[in-house]
Length: 478
Image (cartoon, rainbow, N blue to C red; front, top):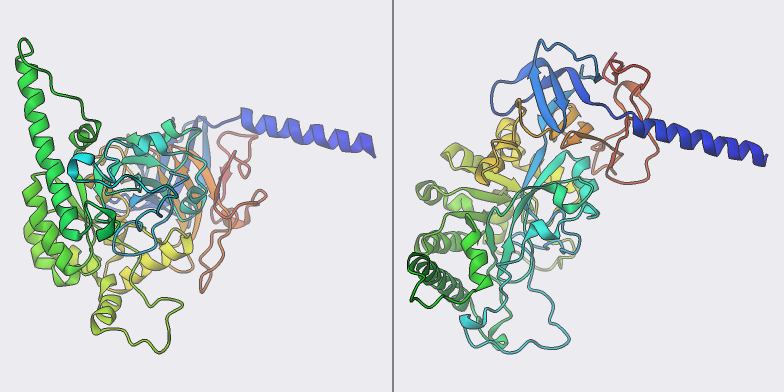
């Protein structure tokens, strides 16, 4: 019996080593429906991947001899979904609880911080912190995100008022540095404080004054650096300020604007700051569509729609404004689309795959077309962050971030069959259904799935692919 066990162990080990050794140089998804997003939909085409990039896409491709082939009949290929603002990839970042923009203020430390006197003390300022230095592939949320087809995130740190420099990251990699696509992409600002007793800034007015002063200081800092660079001899050098250096390096600022009054205030404030701006939140934008169109600023809409609290007191009667917000917030993406306002969607406080799918479907049910929903989760965020040359559509030369589904994306019965991140294949495991069959199962066409020990998408070392022939077809509806 012991000899049999030893023999079985070595057989499994050698088989695993053989699988790892035979890594495909190319993968072809053949005869699938391809939603390119950037152009016309291709009803029957092949997408060829090589070296982490899309080598070619089209209806009549010559199949390379070294390509592993996935039968795409009955499947649809989309660009990998792009979360336009999140903390995905930063393991220590707590998910935000609310819809009005980012997380609540951090808990009060055991040892109180020194009382600040003004903006010169730089309270709650982490403008220099980089998401690119914080992301790690060990973040447990990445598996669930991939299981829904998300391959990319605009990830920002999440503490303080000036939270730090964001980065576009892919949701897989051997180490954090391999996940980063572009950085920095912006400085996120969150208008949160500790109240009047916490010192400066202790009020909403104080928060705006603080942000304003930081950018006034930045203007003076830039002028001093330029003057010194032009006349170094005989000119005192300006002191180095790493808080202002963080602001200086940022190509844009992200400002919270969820409520109608906040939208008015932030639109005016963005002009005053003289910085390229992106607004996020936008739940009450249904009352400010004309103003947003006139401002011509890109916006990010939070998918965590306002709803009745689960533990609400049945005796509490909500205000009319709350009821209106719950009813109309999901219509904001549709209204923005019809007005021609550039927007993207992001998940904040809805990190569970089933929840995100439900929230997107809610926006579609409220009038957003499926095509616009897909664009708001692919090419639009790529355009907003300046990475549309490498992400956001199924085009030759772009990063091979793809999601392959059986059925239309975000429909209740649709399953995610394959996910590619930087050309690396992942197969989603089954998700717990949310009011219906919304999970992703085994291989298409009854192909066997490897053991499933996680709730998200796991890296696939071609467990389902026939390794005996490079051009062997796998999956599909045969």
